[in-house]
Length: 192
Image (tube, rainbow, N blue to C red; front, side):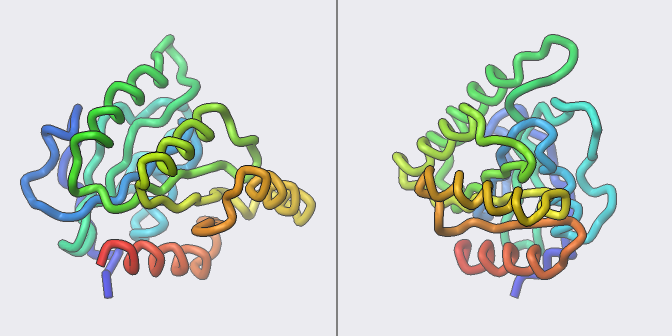
């Protein structure tokens, strides 16, 4: 069993070519800027400030590698979408991720994060289609589910079904250990 609490930040890398030397499998986290990637990392690993959280979108600009129990790397990718200061996050994400996906035999799983309160955007759909077309294993992780009511959850489920996303969907909240335990189990089963 993987101990997610046994975690350390390893390095930030501008490209996959500068990944850490250890040849561990990788679980990549992608999503819109401000979707809750850092919060998910902190909650999964039960560390309040392991990954820096910010109210300002566009904080992550590099690939951040976290060693989980000497079993795999959790890799936090830059967000896509909006950022203050005129930074083109889509271009940054696109350039970095093209290389990451095409030149990385260690990638075992992608966690595509979607904010439960937001619509699937064009970028989300493009990434989902890319993962499907290239047979890259993925989980859709719905974040901030504590912030929506039953009607919102029903509408979200309807949208997911319309997109043919019915398997490997995890509804998470930083307030619920049960949902995070299910996600941990899913990750563990896939990287073994």
